[in-house]
Length: 245
Ligand code: NDP
Image (cartoon, rainbow, N blue to C red; front, side, top):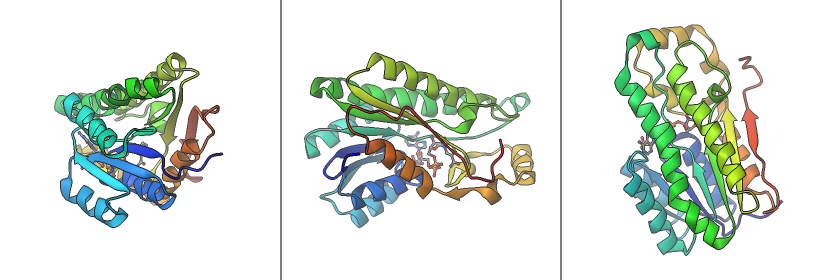
């Protein structure tokens, strides 16, 4: 295992949930972080608490290729390079297909798939030139199994899994690639669900009751970051003990 002190880590979706907690944990361990998301006030507050010598941000929408590239460039011009990317930004507006919420399908595809691809594109050539680097993509257990209401969300998270595997194979010997599959954890993700019937359906299940703190996923991300360059933890699945499916 290696120390992550002084490593430079770009995290998308850093304004809440896993991204925010991972940023804090990385800085606690001595790393430098480059943070992206759309909510400027959240990023400002987080960077102020972490210290401007350790944490910088750029408001960026992962559906905008230029903004993602600008985020990476901002990090490279500030810290000199990027060691790792945590491709974490995502949304989960679950709904039944019969509801025809096509705008939400478009958004999920744009954020969860294209956002991940733009993140990879923004750092890939930089990492290849340096001869090393690490990319951690956040999928979901919904990227391993489908439930009623998760067809499109699961589709995007299966895609993250496929993209991670392709990236791993194509970059073998150069990059360490990890795909993380969280179960139910306490973040703001549920707030993106607008379909009332889906909310009722989820309320009947007990997922919210068993959801565990976001820190548990940040710890899994840190575990992947701490691997020696010769080792890549390819997949990590983490569920609350009480989550069956
Ligand atoms: P949160 O809603 O707390 O965080 C999502 C983050 O993504 C926010 O920082 C948000 O920032 C950012 N984001 C959303 N849309 C965009 C966009 N267009 N451009 C840039 N950033 C964006 O949820 P989580 O922390 O739970 O989500 C993180 C990842 O974990 C997601 O990929 C999610 O699918 C995955 N996941 C979460 C699980 C859970 O139980 N919590 C389970 C399985 C997977 P902002 O709104 O400021 O742009």
